Amino acid sequence: MVHVMVSMSGLRRSEVVAGILDEAGGIEAVIDHPGEDIYDAGTGPEVLVVDLETYLSRKKGGFPPTAKVLVIAPDDEVGLPAIEGPLYGVIGPGAGTLELQTAVKAVANGVVLKEESGSQGFSSAKRISRCAVRTVCAPEN
Picture 1 (cartoon, one colour):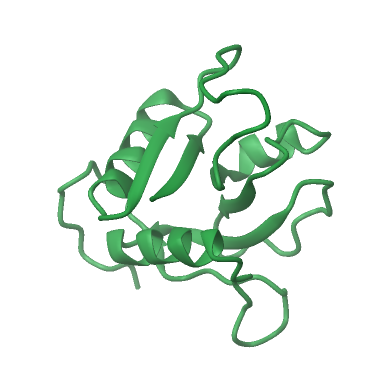
Picture 2: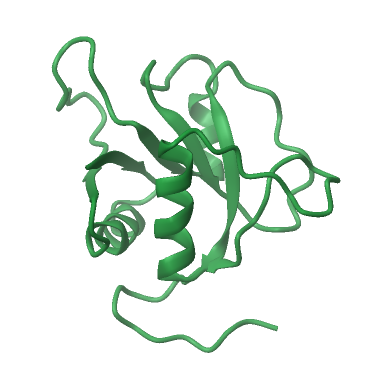
């Protein structure tokens, strides 16, 4: 079981992403509520899924020490600033359900998502839909 914490800049966005992840077998997603410690001391999520706003606001040591960070950010974001947290990859905000679930499982297993062109060092693995869970969206062009 992969333990994932979702921390997006809005509760509804966190709920949608956590719902997408919970649908996958082998993933247990919880929503980060600031001030609540849902993990026992010395433990934490294997993967922390955050949006760019949360990533930038928490970069000064606000990440669980054991978590590998997966950032949801637009494809056109060039070069995320270096942080102390363990950044394992970037995925686009319109990635599909399967792409997000696969990326989380890969990151949990220590895979660093590299951009195929090699230009940025991290990849965007298609698009995480901004639609609600279980809503089918047409691919963006």
